[in-house]
Length: 332
Image (cartoon, rainbow, N blue to C red):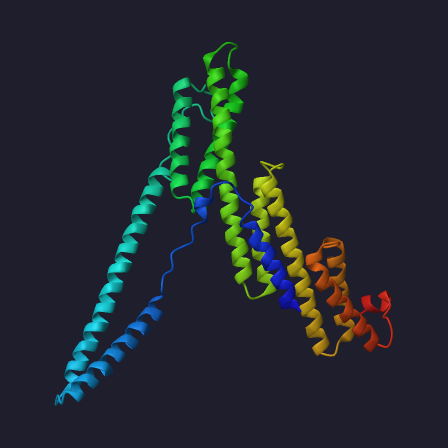
């Protein structure tokens, strides 16, 4: 039964991946890489097959030393496999280094010096334009490396800095100053950039943590990963509390965690019953039933777990010769 409850939770976790921002290009799957151990096992198997194939051909051809030709052929196959993998790995490393350097130059390069930001000096029109160009370049780079959450976070952090600086500066700007219009326009543009990259960051991070949760073996680890995903979504909700996608993701993640908690309680109940501690098992089942009733009331998806837990409670109460009182259960 815990496995069935977990399947429901994992299925809901997948919904979070569809609840993020509008840019779907960041959903590209990571390329598959065969581990070195698996690759070399296949290479050895291929060279061994080549050895016996060539040995058989040469043996049928009445060659007096078929193992020499077979060994040479097998060595060529194995050497070619090793050489091929080295080329692939070297190219992959070079691409990774190039991409990282590009990201460092654009997203994590030295921050442009902006006199006046966070200081008592006023922000000039030229400095404001320079900051906006800086944010624009970082935004373009983050979109290019769309599946890297660090890039999106770098951008919306920079947007926060800009908005805070402009917010401090505006009250000090004289009425009629051309800086007012420039600052207001900059605020509008940066807020849009901030929202886009905040949503992208929350989507990528929460999706990765949800998938991590589904791959964990222990229920406690699943709950921990799902909880970190909730923290990510909460951080985005603190900026955009009315964003439907974030609200939906938060709701789904909360249901996932509740389902996992129910699964954990059911596992504890089953272990207690195996140790013949029926009262303790009944405590865990009743706790699980309380979670189902309070958090999944009226939902069809969780009707089956509710009915199964109810049957288990009735069965244990029958084995204990009648319903166990709440006081007896708490004294266990």
